[in-house]
Amino acid sequence: MTATIQVGATQRSSKDLIRTAVSGWLGTAMEYMDFQLYSLAAAIIFPKIFFPNFDPVVGLLIAFMTYGVGFLARPVGAWFFGRMGDRVGRKKVLVITIMMMGVSTMLIGFLPGYAQIGLAAPIILVFLRLAQGFGAGAELSGASVMLAEYAPPKKRGLIASFVCLGTNSGTLLASGLWVLLTLLPEEALVSWGWRLPFIASIGITLYALWMRRNLKESPVFEAARAQEIADAAAAAAFAAESGTAVGQSVPAAKTKRKGKAFFLAMALRIGESGNSAMIQTFLIGYIVTGLSMDKSVGTFALLIGSFLGFATVPLAGWLSDKFGRRSMYRALSGFQMCFAIPALLMMQSRDPFLVSLALIIGLSVSVLGMFSVQSAYVNELFGSRNRYTQLAMAKEIGGVLSGGLAPIIAAGLLALFTNSWWPVAGMMVLYSAIAFVATFFAPETKGRDLTLVEDAV
Image (cartoon, rainbow, N blue to C red; front, side, top):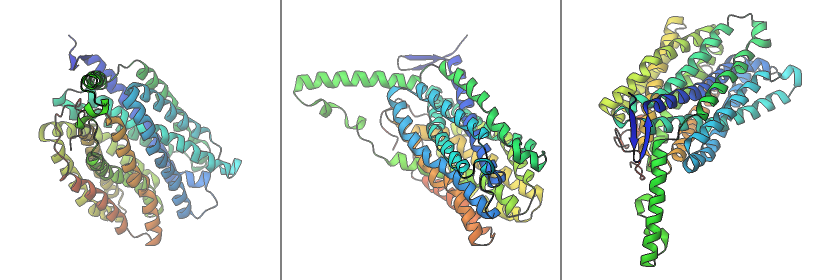
């Protein structure tokens, strides 16, 4: 017997929920595979391919700048597609974003290097990175909104965390591919090996696109749209009877946007995104260029951390259903705030086991744990009318302020302070502290009705 999900007059079956979960998983896997492929390539290969005439540290800094460029396009994509998602539905946006991301990623794999076409190579790379970021700006948010709006309230933390399993799958797949690629001879890796995962990503794109074209729209969106039509009709009728303007008859709670929820969501995002970029991007390059260790150490650690995430992600989501979103986010961000300095000290040992352990704990517990709880938490902070737009903008602006700039700032500090580790640890403490403090201002939202129009705070 198939269970049903009831939201207002809208029904969805458990099969619809499963199809939505798989679709969101594939899309976010695609986004984060793109993210991880590019970040690892920027740390290991791109300085040689696209910026060969620079000092290695300067080349690494420029490669990370091209990585950061993609983050600049994400808020624009979040605003554009977020508004579209709030107006015409979540499903249509998710079809468009997966196409943009997949095609851009594939084309990076075919792009000639600096040796072949000169300055045009990094210019085209930046353009493709911008297109990739524009589509990705609403991808994760859309999948998160869609799944949270499908999920039963009592299991929303667990089910919404499945989006994070998609991000984790993408990281795992990309890291696994890079572990294999690093086994190639250096000449083969630089000439053609690095291109293979970028080109192969089109397969995931096509399957995810097929899945999304067969999705049903979010039940919360349809219920909210039906209520909006009913409210408009009631307002028009009231205006006709009373002689007032239609806008004056709409309840204030349905037209006023306070903005506090937006800034809280952005702060929560900064704690997760900043640490994610430091661990998955900057520290991988730091292991090679700053610690003079083999490049396989970092990529293998990310592989293990991503694999463990398949346990820590649903566990964190389930615990947030049991103990609340706020307490779990506070515990996870507080842990990372305390762990940053010991993690960097472990890395200074240059012992492969300790270096790997620091990355594994930071990724699987802190970053993926926060990401898991965030999937339900930020959705519940917003009202139904502008949820997609506000959530996408909060995530992407927070991502630019933290994840997009973190590797660039850290690389600059590394050069300024002659490979000193303490500014890097300080950045990770700061990112964690921002999220930790935000939990004292954010409300507990566990089980909140997502059809409510007003924000939670």
